[in-house]
Length: 311
Image (cartoon, rainbow, N blue to C red):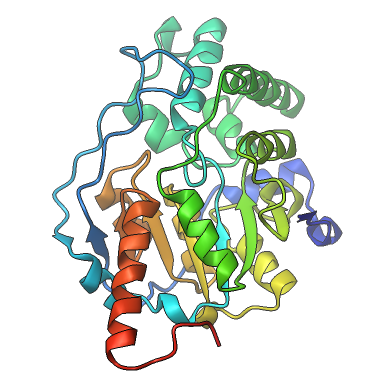
């Protein structure tokens, strides 16, 4: 895996990046209707951390579910040439650890009167966003250096929690093997700091699974702007018509959609309706649902007498 350096040519200063992150880029929704496969599962109680009252609660939904066959019809999995993956919450069950790390660090600072932030606050104000945007939102009166120190403290706390053990999202390894067998191009595209991203990939044994690692902090604009995904496509020589994104946060979904890409959203940490509003065209519990949709597409192609391999 190569880490992206091309974004560095257009990297903005922290101040200008924060200003750019204030308002998501305007985008045109993809024409596909959102499809939900299966019953979105509960957010994990914790990864290497005992369940507690501060863990994000179960995910519920009123979104209409459908079958793998219907999902396969909504996206052309068999024509893909490339797949782009978010990391936190998409490859690894990390949201409960980020939630706990933010709770602890913010409580120590006396934020919210010293009371722990709740799940709703985490999902709507923190999850999936870039650290400079989070710290600017939480502490608008702080100087930049102090905000940076806060973010670094939080990420150090997260890495300490993550050291207790990380697990891949269900079905991920099977899907990655399918991707490998078809010779698809791959990149991991994340708003996480480099130290976090590399630690998570290494912990999962996936540090060589992706051709490129694209970091939002090394691009002019991080997610929800399209820059990281546009950079990944440029590196891989791909067009939106032959590429698919896997995400788990509204910010990440918005970034993929703004780049003109179809986005499959996992309900590992957000409500399906939130992901739908962000523009996801397919909503799944995890990669087991993705593989079910792919198998349905392969069966349909075989029934039509089409070749099973990637062109």
